[in-house]
Length: 200
Image (cartoon, rainbow, N blue to C red; front, side, top):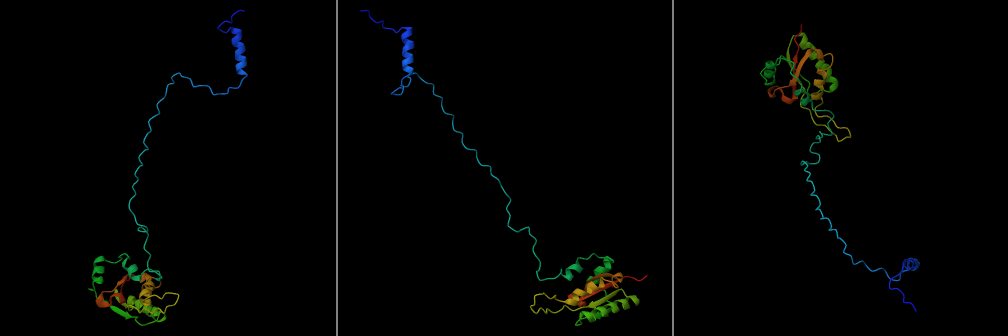
């Protein structure tokens, strides 16, 4: 009997491969003993530092306009007159404000109603113009606070508020050059200097 060769022939290898491919492996293949090249992991980068954002310090509402008196119907007439531009000679105006000029005529409206005071003031100013007077004094009084607690606020010193308004409306506006609060010796807040235009 002839001995089998120790090595497989080419036909045997092809046949064996066909058989091996048609079978299911019972055990997983053994890992290869060949040395595999290991790639070292990339170094972990530290997280970026947060950027500091600085904001200027502020307080809520610091730039908001402060509300005025909610019960006031209009700006103070005293403030309105004080902010009016000087239309007359400044040197004469300064003397008048300091009480160094004596009024040539005066009228006292203190205690009158609006209906009584308006025609009286109009007549007084027109008479002063006819008499060629320049500086007159209009006394209104400081007024009394008569708020009775109703829903509509009542202005303090009605005549003190109304007189400048009347002087700045027809027929007196064209004759009045300057209105300003009187000096203390002539009534202070309760009176007005009225400087009239020179008649041509």
